[in-house]
Length: 288
Image (cartoon, rainbow, N blue to C red):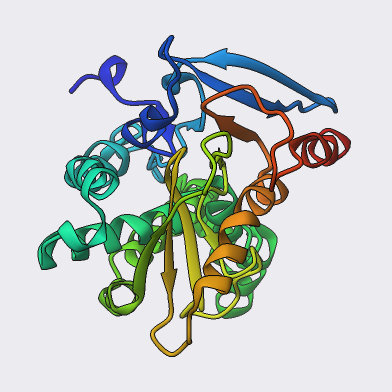
């Protein structure tokens, strides 16, 4: 594939997933936090939102290496999304019980990817440690490292970014984490009234209360359509209808609170019985 054919628009929420939120005109309602402050909203195509150009691009670390590679986006993420798309439709249509063991494992991998593939998550890997700390650690081990780097034309920034991407891939396919997701109790919740609906954001997958620090989460929430919320609960926890109700009615607020770029809806947002979107969006506006 030539350079001008390489994928540059890398979606951290796959387009097949966004398609569930398209309205009768084939559009999404997109509420966007502006770089200069404030918030704007528009109707747009799924391809126009929830992406960062070259988010998963591997960059050449040495002048003799070939140009940037979109292998992670095109092959790795592409394979996960292709396999998950049909399972997603089945999950929305027929529920958790309809999935085979293999489909459940594949969807567990997709959940893992949704956690790891966000810009915020990837930035945390790139910034820990920072490039300056990284170079300082190299210098302590080998005082002549900077001369060697300069002499060989090595791009340290590219190397650090590529290491972060490799770490992201390793985390996504970690068999222990995938199995821990698979072991959780999977429940699909729905609002009792038709006027209520679930939204998406750039942190669409909410782990615990949006402040996940432990390796194995207590619960995970992800809207799989405007009308259905997938809730995954750790096998060690007791779950009842009250907990499911709480996790359902607080999901939209957590999505807005956690989002840094976008809030995505299938319809124009207005206050509903459980979700006061006007107040939540006001906070999004203030944070711009």
